[in-house]
Length: 366
Ligand SMILES: *Cc1c(COP(=O)(O)O)cnc(C)c1O
Image (cartoon, rainbow, N blue to C red; front, side):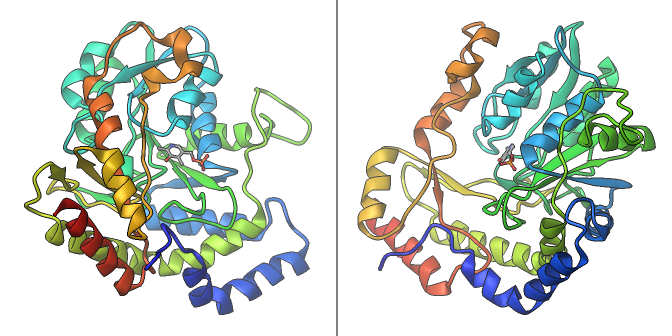
């Protein structure tokens, strides 16, 4: 049996009767940019997260970039982030001319190692950008505490953790700002690129609104440099329909993760993901650590189980970031890069496919 890594068409079929009229309405209304569905979607997103303000963005990358621009971070500034993430996290920091300062991660959670955070703070540090990787929220309380002590601003890169909870509160609403992505393969995806930024203060919200629209507080009057970071009305209409089903989808993701957790214990050289007891995960990826990963991946593929590697290389190993790096090693990130492998997991994954993954992993590991 050959199964797909991800099949979003099952979800589309389930929502088709709501999505089609929603999209048709946008087309007939003619307000394709910042139409009424945009604000409606932002209200729904803010309510879902429990944050005072939400602003949609053209992508998760733009949401992160807008957060830095709104706080006037730039050349001469340092922003602390993790060595283990998707490239965009450190990319946006370097793109505006600030220095990405990396912290290694914990092997159990794949998230930023709080023990190493404070030693990275210098007089140039302006912000901390933790990543809630694979859908599990980072240690936000401890991170906020370090930030408060040193007068720093915290942006959670919640591109993979939208909907995850931490001590009873939701990801994206746990620090001054939180940014997420609606790239189709993320836990909550739209039908193209998309993202959102959440914030706590009116001041940040206004700055973000200006930055999203070329730095213009009023038409053709530009007080700062911004970008075109708007999300299409069409995508907002799609998100509004998909958001209603999302709590059910989170439950399904967690249910499948539990099947994997319970079925894949007790194999030598295999570690299933560890979620801390005061939070949950939306499992943007279900990532194992395994010895002889490349061989394991090849054998699973032969049994019809596709997998993926997030991420084979740390930020410090990326040529594009070389000028910011000092040659420092990030041993946990490097070890994860060699051992990590993600199994197929999505809300609408057929039970027979889940079973096939479990049986195949068991067969490969003997
Ligand atoms: C996907 C992702 C991004 C970027 O989001 P896009 O919508 O693809 O621009 C940023 N950070 C992390 C951790 C991501 O997984």
